[in-house]
Length: 390
Image (cartoon, rainbow, N blue to C red; front, side, top):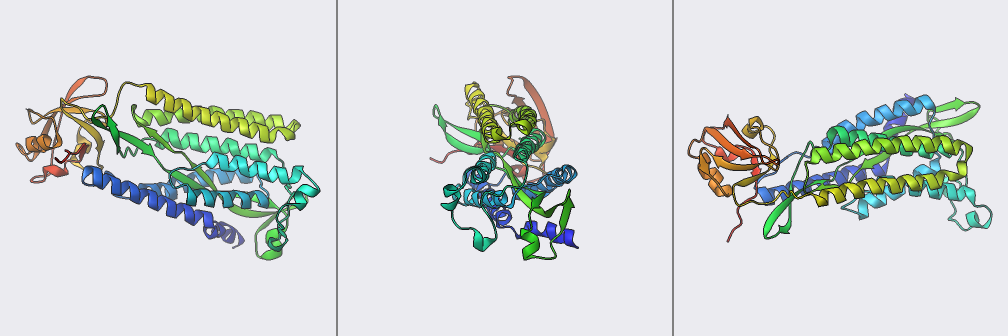
């Protein structure tokens, strides 16, 4: 029963519900823009929330199991600082999430309160009414590097296996007189991470709270929300390839974090510095990925000889066609096309079948065909640039 109470505490934390609200707003905004740009949403469901519930829970359960085996703990002060910063970030920064920065800043603040004594701590706000105390860390400082290592591991795994699967395009400014599309990644997860909290704060407030005793020290069992996410937009490459490359590089940062973990066992005073190094390394990986994307010649732009495929709506006839975002449809039902209107006019020639001649991103030609819904050629499911009025 006590374990159920500890797990249920996850749902009582403000950060979890702020994250749910933020994801709902993100999904709603995406659907609104897709309807404005393409007539209907590419993905009509809030897949961001679905991934939050499925992928987040699975990855959180795996991380929690490992934490329990190794006896991973975090001080309550760190958890409070982290969740306050996370809530503020989710509320006031509607277009970005800075999960690793939150970990680093929370750690530096927590360590600082214990590293400086006397007048420094006396100048901080009084925490007595809350039952908390400044300067009490009570866990090995290497735990923060362990947390950073798992952040990189989880994010790398998530990006490598799921990044780019939901290629929802968005129309951006014109490039040389033509509209261009980009593929933004705005998802994030909140992992329910089981951690051990040293001290008697929970027991003194709730006698029923589950406790563990390890080597004579008492720990409360708490499920902490861990924010994992990324903000990135691909303009010139296949999104799936971009995120797989970023995921691979994050695994190297995981190994570096573990090396730093071993180093700080002997030099615990270097924890803050090594965390900043990891943060800089993370920023460099994203900067290089963005820079490499900007150097490519390809654009997801309008073309004169055909129509550009921007996405394929799920559960439509187009799924059976051998098409991908970036392909250019040159002919439909043996008729040359150069706009969305001419594409659907060509479909009406044979309203139950679609025969396409296509040029892919590599410049190779291919032919593909499929049956479509009788009398409803507009439901074929290929997302194109809409014709501009006027």
